[in-house]
Length: 416
Ligand SMILES: Cc1cc2nc3c(=O)[nH]c(=O)nc-3n(C[C@H](O)[C@H](O)[C@H](O)COP(=O)(O)OP(=O)(O)OC[C@H]3O[C@@H](n4cnc5c(N)ncnc54)[C@H](O)[C@@H]3O)c2cc1C
Image (tube, rainbow, N blue to C red; front, side, top):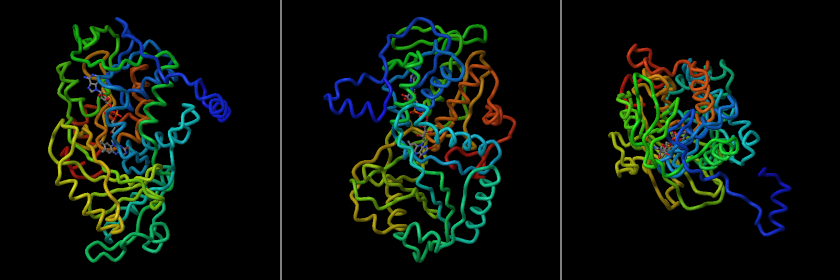
């Protein structure tokens, strides 16, 4: 079933009776060439590109809940390519290019909106740091414009520019940054993978990983044992627990990240904006809600819900930056389990067990990575060699010390 304006018109005139389900609901088979554990954004995009780019369709995605019920449906939907370090910048640049063609690729409206992202700065030192980042972005082919205070005011007149403690000095504008509809991304990839023959199996929790003589042979699930030549772990905040089923200890800590949304308002915030002196970033959804968030809750947890100290900090930071926000009523808040690595960068690599691969460590920034992560993880699984833009996302960097530390805060999971 292809979506088109003509199809919409026809269905509108005939009572919307011709739509079919987005994907099948197959029973698990006994045996697959490839099993992916986790039906989030990364698992689904990997399945899609395994089929599309490599012709591998004897593939199952095993999801313990429902597709898109994890972080892919819980994030604040920011899509950007504003990374600094060699290794990260090529990867996110590749991802943004995939985003730019994603709706045509999937024939699905993922509502990708390049409304521009502005990172504010509030001191001379911060201006230097953002100038450096902006130059690095431009040098490697992405877009960045350094705005002075009046330049920011033209875009964001509603900010409190003269806050006594945190006056706004300027901002780094990344025009191609923006947002996308998070669950539509999961659904679009799911539909595309299903149409190419991948089995998407929901309510199927993996409870064990079978390894014989150093080689993976399959998985145990709540719906029975499934044999597989290759197994990919793509379980975000649960990566540590799932890898432990194969006897591995990953350098991952799981931390909670919260987000908040207000009641629907008329259009007021056109961009994605982030505060430079407190943890607060915001955009407005197409339904009108102000969507905003802050930093991690700062303790390890699998709770999938947040706690009050960070909620208080986020509200304070929002009020400091844009006092008008105090008039909006918060509708709901939620949390997701982040797979934090010691350097804040992800892992897309083989493991020491033949046929077992991991794609994890996306921390709080893995939504924008969904297209490129799937592209690169599919490449790794299909060819047993890393894709060139993900070549630095190796597991052994935590042993060798060749970290990809964007923040420069050192090896501490909760600081990235
Ligand atoms: C509040 C919040 C805000 C965020 N904001 C942004 C943002 O603005 N921009 C951005 O780029 N990123 C953002 N992120 C991060 C981003 O959402 C994640 O990095 C990314 O979604 C993680 O990858 P995923 O989609 O594959 O994860 P998930 O959707 O969590 O997928 C993993 C899946 O694995 C399944 N699973 C786990 N264990 C098992 C098992 N044993 N058997 C079977 N299935 C299993 C889970 O049920 C889950 O569905 C945010 C995250 C949160 C929580």
